[in-house]
Amino acid sequence: MLTVCAAQFATGDNVEENLATCLRMIDAAAARGVQLLVLPEFCNHLSWYRDSACARAVALTLDGAFLTAIAERAAQHRLHLVINVSLKGPVELTVTSLLYGPDGQCLHRADKQTLMGHENTWFARAAAPAAAVDTEIARLGLFPCRDGVTFETPRALALQGAQIFCDSLNSFALDEAALHVPARAAENRVFMVAANKVGPLIPEALLGEVSAATAIPEQFLYGAGESQIVAPDGTVLARGPRSGEALVIAEIDPAQADNKRRRDGSDLLAARRPALYGGLGVARPQAIRDEVPESVVVACLAPTENALLDDPAWLRELPQDTVLGVFPELFGCSAAALAELDELPAGGNSKTILDESRQVLAYMQALCCKQPGLHLVNSLPLSLLEGEEGLALTTVLVNESGVIARQALLHPSRAHPWSVTGDQLELVDLPWARLALVAGDDLHFPELVKLAALRGAHVLAVPFTSRDAELSQYGLPSRSAENRLCVVASARAGTGHGLIASLHGEFTLMTPWSTRVFDGMINLPLITGQREQVTAAPINPRAATNKLMSADTDLLADRPWFLSAALWQ
Image 1 (cartoon, rainbow, N blue to C red):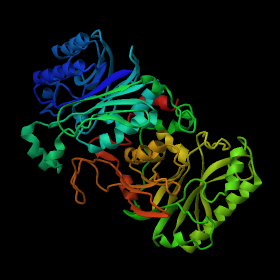
Image 2: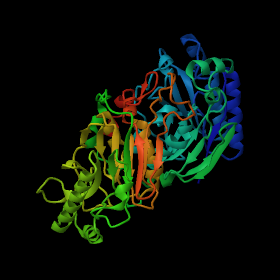
Image 3: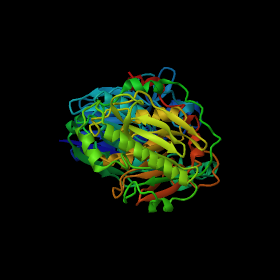
Image 4: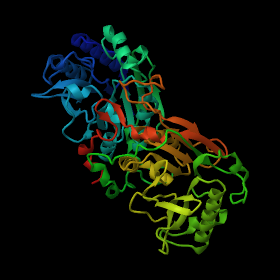
């Protein structure tokens, strides 16, 4: 077992005092037997500078006194140590995570790939892709703060066999700990050691002035703490408090991160299809329609009564202005059909199953005729192309005219071994949104949802069966948050795993907000959990048109696409 630690503490604008704090926390961790220690982001100085001369003056050099002292302390205690600082190059400054080994040698550096807000004023982005590094204790992947808010950098490290993510944070956002940190661990099946700051993130004398200028309440200009250690399934093994210094410690077995098996037995990374993801390499996203409404009503549907009743009672619970209803995966399929599917070989076909699926489609169309404007979504076994051999789990969009869009499962699934796979993601334009249809198991692949966002999707419609609890707990909200997409995902009644995720209309930091007071959550989706037969709620498609998190930090346009070729090669 390996003892790992996330050190949580405050830094100020005095570099020498910050070094003393770092050394004190290193000593305290070593006294508790820690073998891998991760420190927060910007350990040398607050990420707040009067001008470029100030930013350069407080930045460090690899051979300077600050980092020499850190290296010596790592050697003294014979531990692996990750520290993040602003680093001085010949021309440019970078935000850099450094790994020191138990002999005091610098084993690895990782420059920040996605800069946040004003960091773009002072620092240069990484020039090289992220790289995992082998050590005697584990294979490590290093990244700081904003690089973990979206999937690209951690995913690239996971593909290189990283067993532990070392995430240094300088964040006042409460959704960092609540969502992004555990989501990155769970979607890659990798341990996460995430160390965040506490205390003011700007000089104390400026707190009132900055609060007034940014409309961020003063109490939210402090580091949000909650440093944590997360297991590969998303379980939080240890978490620090919201405020105050802390050493967050857990014992882990890094080899557990080598097992990428989902509960259905499939290998999460081996099931990827890089040939589908080439669109991730575009520099600019497709323009997204902005002439969409601020509010439409959608619903998760999980009827428990006989699925194909002519006049179902649950339909009367559906608000008359509902534009979209999503059924769970394979809704309407009989027990006999499901049993036959289980016996069907890959690429096999069955007239009885096809006939039953067509009956369900006809039923869905009839329901839409009862309620004009309604669209219904389901995933059913259908031919990949009409008349073609082989069944595919196919997500269909139906209205009163019949089937108007279909999307085949795109990744192989042990849960549906009979299903052939499609070869492209299809989107459909409706009057109120551009819709992406996603089969449930495809949600395990953040690459696919990013593609939908890059192609201008406002809403994901997802019929699914919850086989992996972390997909519901972290995956669905994370896909919504990192792409600014609304999500309507329906699971079977009683599982508690379906949800509707909408978005705040205002979320760009440092801009005036009129309908929302900042509460520490930058971009946590507005979640309505699925309840019984009908769960209806409004979503905001227009909010999906705003991807700007902060100045020069667009979730799509400013992603590290030029460093992410490993994701589609």
